[in-house]
Image (cartoon, rainbow, N blue to C red; front, side, top):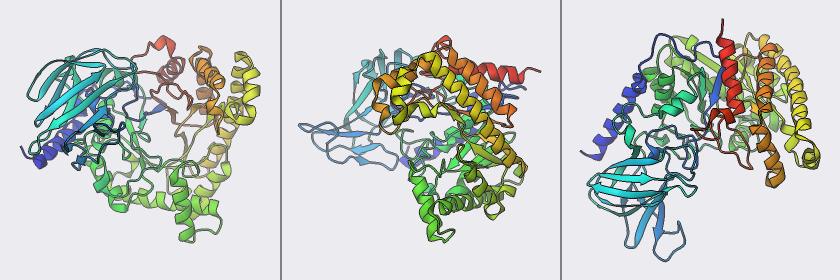
Length: 517
C-alpha cells in the first residue's frame, strides 16, 4: 500500500468512527442529559496522566535525533515525512521518543506494538521486549517515573517504519474502531460540554492554514498544532457531548471554513457546537493577546492599545461566526461565545457594545476562579502563616465576592438576551510571578486540593454561580498531575481512587443533584 493510500484509509477510518460514535452504541438516554457542567480536557502529551487513547503512542513525544558521542537530542536533523515519521537515518544516527514520563494513570502488563515498514526498534526504561515478528512486538510494561522509551535504531530507506501503535493486550481488537480508553470515557461521561482548548493547543498556537492542521495519521497527537479534529469529533459523538472549539488566532478564513465543514459532515446532528475565537485574548501571557493588539492598531480600530485589542478580538470573532453560519442551515446548533475577563466587567462591556456584537452572539464567557490572591508574591508570607482552616475561610469569602461579580456579568448579558457561561472555573491556588518556586506554598496548595473540605468549596461555588444567573459552567480541568504550576486537575491521574478526589466528587454530585427531578 502506498503512503498516500495509507493516509486516505486512515482518514476514512477516522471519519467512520467520528460519524458512528467511536464504536459506542448509545441508548435512548445519555448520562449527560440535563447536565449543567462541561469539562476542559487537559493537553494530550507524553507527561500526561490522563491517557485518553487506547494507543499510548498517540501521545508520544516527537522524535528526538541522537548521534553517538553527542549530548542527548543533539544529533543531526531528522529526515521526517510530513506526518512526522522518520524516513531514513544517517550513519551513527538513531531517533527516540518518550511515550510516557510517569508511573501513574496507565495500565501495567503486556502491550502489543504494531507497525508498518521495516527496521529495528529497541525498548527502554519501563518496557521490555518479550517477542517480536515483522510488524509486531510484544512488550511487558511495568510503570515507573522513568516512563516508556522507544528507539528507532534502523529503518529501511524504501519502506521505513511508520504507523506505530502501542496498545494494551486487552484492547488489541477494539482500538481501531473505538480509540478512546474506556476509563477516560467513564470519567467524563456526565459532562454535557467538552471544551477542547488545550487539545487544540490554542494558547500561542502557530496555525494559520488548513494544511498545517494535525492529521490522525501523524506520529503523535502531542504537537504544537494540537489534536486532530477527527478525534475531537469522534469523542464528542461517543460521549454525546457538545464540543467547544477555540479557533486559532492566526487561522485564515479557509481554515475556519474547512474546519466548520468537517464538523458539519461528521458531528452528530443532535449536538450543539460552541465556537470561540482563541482563548483569553486579553491575557498578556499569551501571544494571541499581542497579535490582537497589533491587528487592532494596524486596522485603526482604536488608538488605545487595550481597546484596539478588544475591538479586533470582537471583529475577528464575528467574522469567524459568520463563516460557521454559512455552513449550518440550522443556526440554532451554534453557540457563539464572546469571552471576557471575569475580574473586569468593563471588558465585557467593550466587546458587547463594539459594532453591536452583543446582538450577534449567543453567550458571554467568563472564568470565575477563586483563591487567586493567595498565590501572589506579596501575599506568600501571610498565606504560609495561615492555618488550613483560615485558608479555606478565605476561599469561601472569595467565592461569595465572585458571585457578586457573576451577578454583574449576568445582568450585562441579559441586556442582550445572552447566556452567561463559564469557559473555565474552579480553584486557582498556585504561586504566580516567581511565587511558584516556593515549595512550602506549593505544598500548602496541593494539600488543600486533596482535602475533603475542597468538595464543599466546589459545591458552594457551583450553587452560587447558578443562583447568581450563570448558566453552563465548564470546569478546569480534567486530569493533571499537581506541581508548582498548579493543581488544576479534578483528577490527578486517570485511574485515581475517587475517594481521594474531592473536586471530582463535588462536580459529579452537583451534576447528579441538578439532573434529579
